[in-house]
Length: 222
Ligand code: DC
Image (cartoon, rainbow, N blue to C red; front, side, top):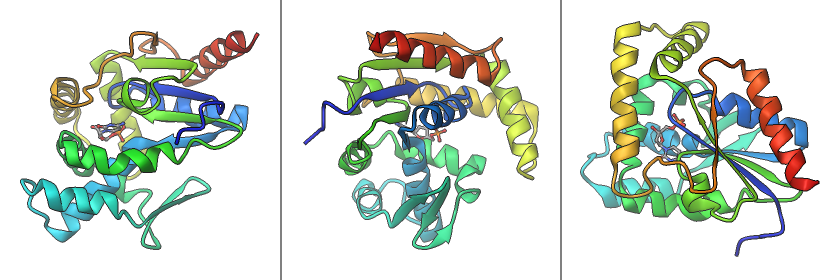
C-alpha cells in the first residue's frame, strides 16, 4: 500500500545528468528520505558479476534482485555488511545495471522495495522511471537532463576524483550506448512523465539546479 499523503519528489533523467547530487541535496534541505533507485540496479549487477550469473537467466537475476541483502545508512551502501558504496559506481557495473534493468522480472522484483522508501516526512526519489512507473502520483516530477558532452565531462571528473581511470572518448560512446538502452527498452523506458518539469542543466551548476527544484516545490505548497 502506498502512503499517498506522504509527499514524493521524483527526479528522473539520463546517466550523469547530475540527478544524484541534486536529489540528494534536495532531500537534505527538506529533511526528506532519499531513494537512489539506480543503486538497487547496480547492487543487483554487482552481485550478478561476482556470482558469474548468466545474463540470459532472467529468473536467476530477478532472484538476486528480490533478495538483495542491501542496507543504506548515512550515505553508505552495504551489501551483506560489505561497504560497496564505491564498487557499485564502477563504469562496468553501471553498464551491467543498464542491461539487467531491461528485464521485466528484475524491475518487478525491485518494485516493492522502492515503494518502501516512501516514509514521512517525505521522499526524493532518483532514477529513470520514478515519475512514470514507481510514483506516478508524485506531486512534483522533475526530468533532469544535460547534453551528452556536458554529462561525459561530469562523469570524467567524477571518476578521476574517485581514483578510477577514465577516457573521454570511451565515456562519450558508453554514455550514448547507455542512453540508447535506457530510452529504447520496452519496459519502463527513460522518458519524461507527461507532467514532469524539464530541467536542462548543461549550463547550470548543481547548486542552481537544487535551488530551482526547491523553488518549484515551495510554489507547489503555497
Ligand atoms: O542512475 P544510475 O546510473 O546509477 O543507474 C544505473 C542503471 O540502472 C541505469 O543505466 C538504468 C538502470 N536504472 C533503471 O533502469 N531504472 C531506475 N529507476 C534507475 C536505474
